[in-house]
Amino acid sequence: MPRILAIDYGQKRTGIAITDEMQIIASGLTTIASETAILFLKDYFAKEKVEKVLIGEPKQMNGEPSQSTEIIEKFVTKFINNFPDMPIERVDERFTSKMAFQTMIDSGLKKKQRQNKALVDEISATIMLQDYLTRKMF
Image (cartoon, rainbow, N blue to C red; front, side, top):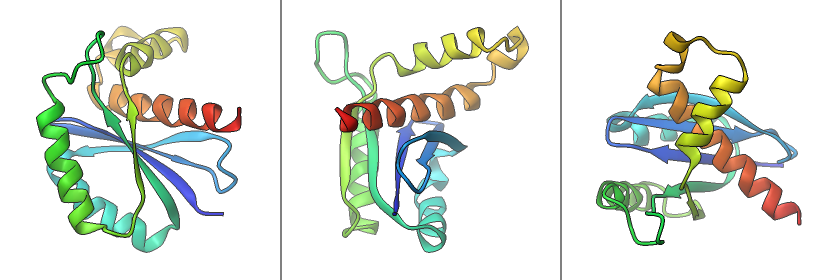
């Protein structure tokens, strides 16, 4: 079965998570420089079967678009232009960074390790993907 990939796109860094082949478990794949995202994805899609891509949709608490919406919308357009046959689904990414940081604390990472913003982005993408998988099951 093909995998599902999640993208937590940011101005500087992009966290990427992927499911197992059974689409049960989400795992962090990597964090890359955002300007290399399309190139990274071209290479990844050539090697792995991916059925769908989730792209985080940043919103404010009241549901309105956040400040980073414009940056992400440009990426989504670029993604669609490069991968017109790849289905995408936008998912709410509110709280994922806070949840990622709390996960780092709960797992016992030291303060210096918790300052690794790349790890926060990768964990955020993983949380977004696992939440999607959980909702899909019910």
